[in-house]
Length: 476
Image 1 (cartoon, helix red, strand yellow):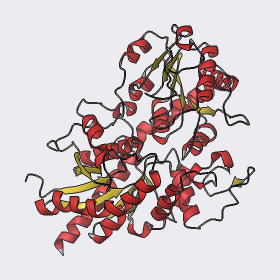
Image 2 (cartoon, rainbow, N blue to C red; image 1 turned 90 degrees about the vertical axis):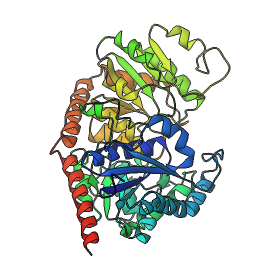
Image 3 (cartoon, rainbow, N blue to C red; image 1 turned 135 degrees about the vertical axis):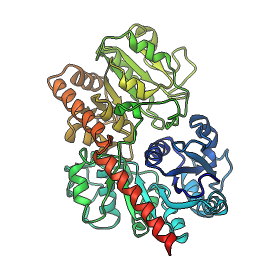
Image 4 (cartoon, rainbow, N blue to C red; image 1 turned 180 degrees about the horizontal axis):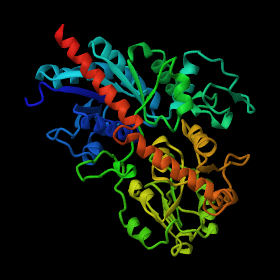
């Protein structure tokens, strides 16, 4: 085969959109440095993944796709039964991935020189170790979360009782974290006990991981990166976002994004009709589903703000059979038809890059957080769970390019709070400062991934190291 003598890297991702997309973008970076790249995930993602990323592996910058079984039928509800899902994945994944590696690489004479996993498939490091292959972990969330998890799960730092509502956590390189800033998986209220077990397995198995790579960039998280340098370094190689957000050519062949739903492209024409820096864009990602009362308060707040808005409401989110598709208050769509547009999904990269967009109301998933940073759009943060509270802390207090909506005693953000935060970003006293900060971080992100930038150099060094290790092992 034409690629038998070339160096191959296998990326193994958890089958979720927010995990696969940064892996794809990292794979593109590796391929641009001369490696042959394959991304493997579980069979349940095959159909939607294959449609989103059309690749045959023929062009050297394309990413080959492979799939393995997680031990369950394709129609099994993995979200509802997450505990059982992770148990089965940990039991069946290692053997099925090993078989895939034998079929794709060993039996075909291809040189597999490194495996890259992420924290939600920590058992991949054991597979690499048994095969005598070096393993890297791509941490797909912020470096400050990596540092927090590492210090917590390894016992490096003592944490105060996290059930105390007034708790403050002081960690090197991080701002002071209050309870509302902490990742939800560390809190006693976490309803998913399986996830902390997976994270613990990941961080207590780090001796089998040679490199920890981060989907961030040095300039963005300098203090926390330096705080871990002498302990267990994390090497920023991001931001791993669509090329268009970084000022790079976005060719039709670079399909490094998987979308769960088909974007409604007409929203771009709608944006074309709006004045520069006038539109509020609202999207809460592919997973978060808000309660009806939250949706209603956001709707009222948007309507009362008077700013043009583009709101993504996912298929089935808050849906009923009424004529407004489940959006409250009644007649919201009719009342705001001249003001706003509601779509089920949109091409977020192109929306954030559009000159009419001035503000992003976001759940603060790390991919969306990086996209608002690299597009230079100030944010209104509405975090829900996992790393999102920490990302909101970063946007508001560290990067100073956003504000965070505060929930009331009932846990729900009021319509007045929605109005207040949107107004603060759009026209408030700190608006100009937030816009200037957003512009600064946009330029810093582009510089990091440009030729010779901090992340570009880190990726180049990583590629050279794994090729060197492969060559050394071949000489023995």
